[in-house]
Every structure is written in C-alpha cells, then in structure tokens.
Image 1: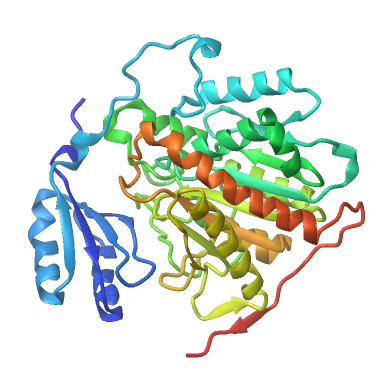
Image 2 (image 1 turned 90 degrees about the vertical axis):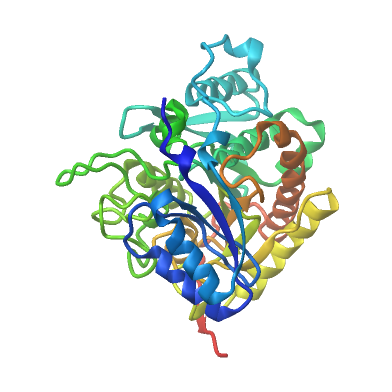
Length: 414
C-alpha cells in the first residue's frame, strides 16, 4: 500500500538558544501537513518534524533565518516495515519477549503467564476498548493480602510508541521468571497495564500508512474524524495548556471533555480504587530518553516535593547508565512546553500518588525503534525499575491503613 510518508523528509533541528526554541513554535501553527514527532525539552535537544515536499522550503527558510543546526533524512516512510506481512503464527511456538507483538498475542501472553504462575499473577478484567478489545490489568504479587504499596505501570497510550508496551511485557516477564526478582516483589505489588490504547496500537500495525498514528480510535459524533490524545484526556488541569481543541488534529486533541475515552477511564479507575496503597506511577512512552515528573501542565510551578521526585529519577537514570544504557534527561515535564491533561499530573495532583513519572524510552530511530535492539535496552531499563522498587519498599512499609497523599506547589522564580 502506498505510504504518504515515503516522500516526507525527517528534519531534526537542534536549537542551541532559547530564542531558537521559541522560533520553532511556528511549526505548530495550522499547516498543510508538517507533523511534529518530538519537541525539544532542553538546549541542543532535537525537535523532530516530518515535512511534506510542499513545506520543505518553508522549514529550510526557518533554519536559515534562525541559524539552527539540523539533520535530514529523505523518503522517511520507506523505513517503515509492513507488520501485517506474515500469517498468524501459533502463539506458544513463536512468542519472544524481544519482539513487537499484535495485541491478541499480548493478551495470550499475559493469560498464559497467569495460568503458569497462579501463585504470582492475577488478572483483573477492566472492560473493553472503544472497538471492543478486552483490556486486562496484570497484578504481580507474592502476597496480595499483605497490603503492600503498589507500583502501577502503564504503556501504549500513544499508539505509535511500540517500545513502551514491549517494556511493560518485559517487566512482567522478569518479575515472574527471574528468581532474583523476588527482591523486587518483596514488600511491593506491581500492577501493569501493557497497552492502554489497543485500538490505536492495532491501527498502527494494519499497514505502513498508519504507522505514525498517535491517538485513540473513537469516532467524533460531529466531525468525520477519529481519536483523542489519551495523554491530554485526564481530568486534572484539563485543556489549560498544550492541547488542541480541533477533533481533526492528528496529535493533541484533548477530547470533548475529561475522560471522554473509555481507555483513560480504566486507568483512572485503577488509580482511584487503589489510591491509598498506590505509591509510584510510571507511564511508559517513547521516544527521547526522558524521565520527567509533574507538573506537566505548567512550567511556572513545581510541586513542593520536586527535589524528592528529581532525586529518585536521577538514581533510576544512574542505574540504567551503570547497566550500559544511556542516562535519562531528568526534568519537570512542563519546563519547556506545558501540556495539560497528562496521566502523570493526574496521578500526582488528583489521586495523590507520591511518585509519578513519564518515562520516554529510547533515543534515535524516532518511533521506529528496531526490534533487534530491544534485547539490549529492555534489560538496561529494568535496572532502573529495581531502584524504583527499592525506594518504595524503603519509604512505604506494608499497611492496610495507608493515607492518601496530596501535594503542594511552589512557584518557580528566575
């Protein structure tokens, strides 16, 4: 099938001054097809844009005017694989933890894992996605009755970010099959939702032309457009910054109201039902190698506890680096470009989760991270999650009367 991205050019811009970052905001204005894959969160960090042939001169003029360093890759879409190219295979014969899998295969994996390890794994039926796909929460625990603190991990709210569900599955695999993982399970319960947006995820697998789809697949009741950015759809400071109100926007449409999407409702319900025990929330995304914490809705304020959030994030980054991985860029999510309605802000600000993060996995290759490299990076990231678990175990002993935590904020002064 023809892929419109075959003739697009990937332009990576490296702003070295704050003025250059601001100048790139013009790329966010309505245009005839420029797509922003990643915004710069710091100086010399890239802003990545996909540019159709008719807009390439416009972007080149900005580069020249602002004197911005850049790299280009022509015919970008030709690097996309056809993931529907092979017939369905028998699951148990072919499943590899270091491959990208269909949503059905992912569900078979978690169901078979629960059957093989009933002493460790329980599944909670959440309901179905907009298009009717069943969604299940994986609970990994040595003793579900112990009232241990909970670590909640979700992944795949953005359909095109395939490395995120791969990491969630690897976490389940290691926690259940690695004898040394008993340390990570001791005194901590793990709740993992591998794919928050199964409809969008499967849409990106359907053919090359859909590979960069980001949103859900709900149908707008007024406009002939599909989808909501699930990570702008949460009900904390909803739509106050960094969102689109246009239902046909390909990227950041926040929805008609908070929690308009059934998939974000499920995540909200998990958080609220476990609010007293939930002590760490991590939303897995890709790409950019960031580990960011609240607030995302503003760059003017930080939580009063930001130093604690920052310190743990840096310890996680150090562990990943010691394992041979690239260190994370650690900062508050809204420092360079505020975006409201994120799950991390909701967990921290509305639910009262003491530690809340968005983890942007992998750098290089944009959203098309090679499957062959998963075996290198997933074990490295796992070392970071061991640090998360150690901190939660140390700070929050098991208690059936844990109180909810609600943060304060402080204003940033320059």
